Image (tube, rainbow, N blue to C red):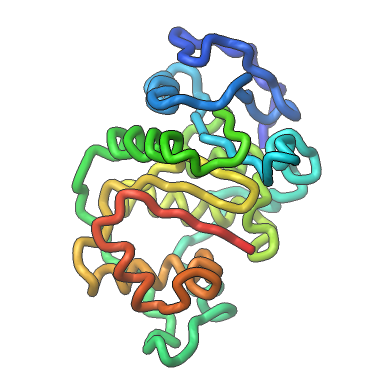
Length: 252
């Protein structure tokens, strides 16, 4: 969580035209919906501002305040540790043991962490492209752009105390731990989040089905609903990961 109140917003280049609002002393929220290029313009200033840009989606059009302006959806109640307190492989292995897929998938035993991906693009350039895609395709409900004090995208969710995976994991710092690891191994960047959905750009995705199956095991451990309430098949899910520039996760 933010240890101190939000500092005054000081942007050299503000693509939004101004009108930012401080929410719950945790993050800044734009006055209007984001446009293509806004995310990358603010990402370029992160080194100076310390503010990570995040595309924000709401629960629905009738509840635009949730989760980003709601003190029950955000805050310290959803942070019980720090991202650096955990080992990502241990977290994923424990989640896998609790939620492992059906034996028919052939993957009932935790296979361990997948091999590191090979960069196919610059991570920040891929992130800018993915953020623009989310905006252009209008994937978010009542969208806004957020700025969160965080040294990296993975930690922004912990800073805000995001509760998206609450029914799966009630300590968002553990989610950030895995995201930190994916930033390093798969060139992931955290570009957006809504009430219970997370959007990640991926610069080093698996490029063949064998590697994709390894990565799919991590995804299943991280978010079983992606398979169990998505495509339904572990193998079909893995195929979707080959060369995928964007990963999304939804928790019921």
